[in-house]
Length: 336
Image 1 (cartoon, one colour):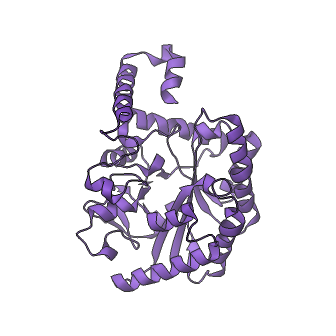
Image 2 (cartoon, one colour; image 1 turned 120 degrees about the horizontal axis):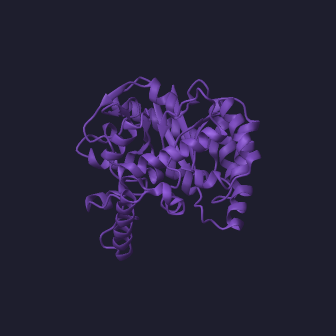
Image 3 (cartoon, one colour; image 1 turned 90 degrees about the vertical axis):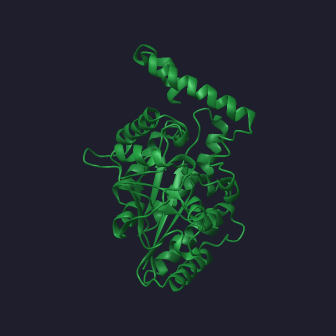
């Protein structure tokens, strides 16, 4: 059996223009949720940043809660305001997760519900990120597999990123998102037909099993921006998303949709050297060869990046020396 994890990342900045937000809501958020409401036997994983959630209608948040309660959505935590986690101090990381969890508790979670995993913005990860998430008592953290492929390139290609076990760093599970298959969704160049995508993904998994000599179950995790469907690609809901879900259902003897937590529980865990990918879902092999792990945000050759990093470090340092309870406006600015 091939377990397919399908994750949507929903975020807009708190400064987003209302007209842009409303267009994305009508083109993407609303119709995708309607698809989930109308299809049976469909379950996905979803993270919603508070910075977006605060801009959504309460009635829409209620619909997400109903889908969560029905088991069609697994909620995954994420920083409330999209901080890039490897570039911030531990206390900022932990506070961002706490703020977003409180948002979930307000609108979605019951008193006995538990958040198992974390989606780091841009899938930007580091060893320290993993340690902090473990300290916050989460079971798993999603990472991108491309840095893993690069740092384990001394191995045969089909052994670099696992598809039949979950990497383990200390006690934190590190399920890996497939950049190859996820980017094929994000770009919509090769595949605009969701049914053909499922067919080729299954064949790709079978080919990997043959190359690796694996006969056990395997998994493939797909994670993309929520706005991919309907906003970035106008026809992607009708042409890709609905056929994608229906084709998986039709091939129930070969594959099934599973949440990321289900995948992290179903598959064996294994401690592996160099398995925590230090990079993001946009870090290329060329970037990593130059030791640029977060080149879009922390490139020493970029003058703005250098100045912004200095500003951030000053702000974080100052916040540790100020009684933020007496400076609510300042505290809110720092959080957002």
